[in-house]
Length: 496
Image (tube, rainbow, N blue to C red; front, side, top):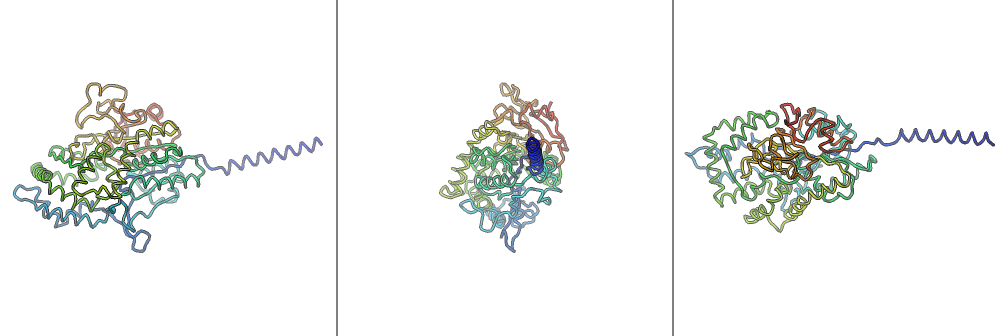
């Protein structure tokens, strides 16, 4: 009997050992999937999607060469540079309107994409199945995707592609669908999200709708459009043209934009000369003072091009929204009875809840990082052109509320004191929504992250790692402080 029990015990132990070994062998790898969310324009749009007539909607009306070779536009536009000639503004606006209308980029009056338009690469499979998307990429979101795949493994990285024109609340619903699908396929309890530019707004909308699901381990916001941009103030008729600011902006862009790869374009514009740019500025000022011309500019040039695109409206700064709506509805540019208005006003409320939502996520265990850049003057078309930006998004907005000095100036008095003040006295991060989870890099432009650089590796390690995301941990692990600067090859050093 004793021998029999011993044999049974041996067999039982053997089975336990075999089961344990096989369980380890067949268990799913304990890796949190990462989803990369691109920004505005980060995914190609198509007409006649899914049919034999499918074709790319390339350019979106922003092709400089095509604009410069349009005789109807240029015959009047060149007159802006001369005191001897006066442009026929009606003819110019009508020519521009015809040009932009042909892009077919605009949504309908309810903010929906025209029938047959959209994307052709909504993926629910990892980037190991889509190597052509990232394996040779060197810049922007695809360069980030490549870095993520190298650090985290392409089988654990996903790209969330979407029609970037649409209401980000709708896009957040699609993101929810992808997250549920990925969790089901991988067995993961949570995913990590990295949102670039408008992708940050998508993450904000996701937080607002689904934060109680508690299925996101990490939220990494990279130059996010979470609180809008001041250049959108043109929708409240805030126009201001300053020759000095324009020349300064062009000169800076020669070396700053895309590492100087487009220097020729900016030099060519600058070569027009101070005098002629000054003449153009005076002519532009004359347009902004003429109510009839301004109304025509919006309703003939802008309206049929991008006027009904929800995502553009959702980039209006929170405090400017009501003023923009008032001005644009008064001239017939925005219909407050439309589906478009319902969408953008709903997102406006989401925007106002961001601080509360992100604090909720952190309180309930999510790791959060917000990365904002500075060192570039704002786009010189509004009264806010003196703001520090990353070339597009104002630093104060991308960071969730930092106190930032005007470009070329420094903070003074109480604003320039405390542990969250940058050594160059430009930023006080104490007023950020999460001051211990927010980082700033000087001289690194909007989403211009290059594969293989220290800057890109840092943000990718933040989303892929298992360490806590806060100033103390990042300083200890990587040596980087809250305030950094980027060199010509995006090498990162602390601002001393």
